Length: 208
Image (cartoon, rainbow, N blue to C red; front, side):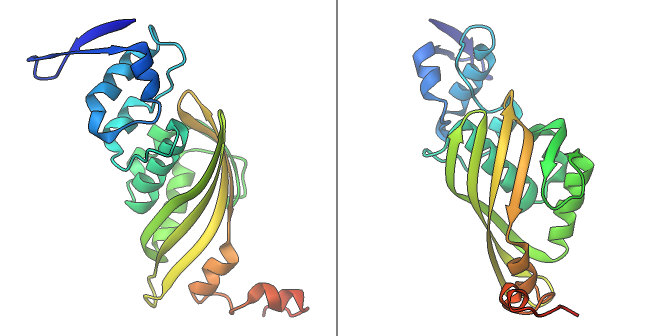
């Protein structure tokens, strides 16, 4: 199966087979025009093709050849929302109401709650850089080991913590998230908790 679409300039056509679109499940940033073409064709003509939402595809430039489309979407979300602080793009990555476990004292959140989390982190950490280090993808579920790097705003000291997220996707966007970040280490490095807090607590000490 193949079809043709004219480019934005109208001076050339684009013909891509179903099998070629399947090969673009891991998007290549150098072939954005092909990616957009396959995205527009997939719903009606190309069953089995799962690509990034079109708005995300246009924005995300840090695609990695070793990542599936779901993992790429998650990394693009980290890059755009947390690393760049572009909270206006949150709705592009999430269902309107998301099942959320971790940090917030609620199970269902929307863009407003996620925005507050981004602001709370950026108030204390600058140069935020969240990356996916390892990923296990069992569509629709994805599990990722992540790392957060940056600098404490108050002191300039380096910040480095690890975490893990489990994410469920629906129709290319995030519908459920389970977060587990090493918050104790984070607040130790920010100077809000004493060093080796876990060791102190395990030894029976009480924080005053």
